[in-house]
Length: 98
Image (cartoon, rainbow, N blue to C red; front, side, top):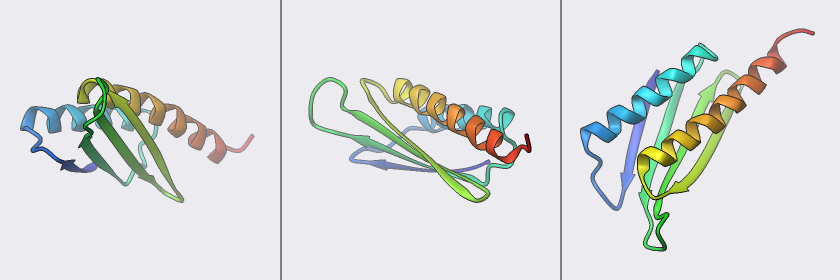
């Protein structure tokens, strides 16, 4: 899957980008027709949970989206991928004839 990562207000290191890529590649086990993903990593200046991750996942016919705040980018990415996993499974169920 092609993953485009943008980091706002900081420079993301290679380890963080690899972590995000690995988490999103796991979504292919649930639905293998994903086209690409756009990830936005943002640092906010308020409170302890000041790191925001937004993920747009493009699948045929639809765009799935998740955004989460957390104290670390890794935790926020975990929460986003879990939300996207549920959305992908729902999208796949819609496509199957009953």
